[in-house]
Length: 236
Ligand code: C5P
View 1 (cartoon, rainbow, N blue to C red):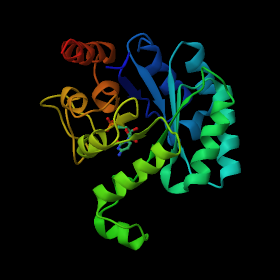
View 2: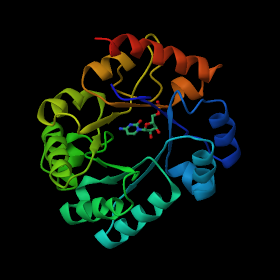
View 3: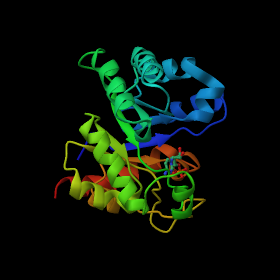
């Protein structure tokens, strides 16, 4: 089990809202994720604020561009001191290798580099329309293998595909899994959900958890409860 496996998605619309949320979290108990909405609103200043507060930041901007541009963006992300960044595996091997090489030059404390395989919003017919050979699990596995071959640290994996990926790609290859809900809680707009314990049991290393923590009346307490439920797994 990884240290601090919970990554709290700071899906807030502004610097102030994200700061208020982050300040209620303890960097010793979780990591945080900054996605496209928040980064577009609050930018590097927010990332810098979080890093200075001691947070491990997953900069979730899902880069997908020509290799030179993605490599340059990765170098800037490393300079911000983030812990993890992601790219689309469908950007191809040259892009993935350029991203990895750019981060390697940042040295030992470099950000981890993970890949998006197939967006979970894409259905089987959608895959066909964009020219991706399906079915979905095979496309996911193909892109995850490509990320592995290109030396990336892991992939984002839906809970539904964690088992399949873990069987094919053993640790230390990382699986970062969103779509987590606490037992008995609302699903929100997540279609396929699993509990923190079952995601870890299926092979996930890190859990991206947003609303179950951020919308909680007491985020730190909810986080502590999740960590506690996972600590019982740690001993097995
Ligand atoms: O609030 P919730 O726990 O659903 O937040 C999940 C986070 O994980 C959001 O930041 C969302 O963008 C992200 N995510 C997801 N499903 C994916 C990939 C990422 O929900 N397939």
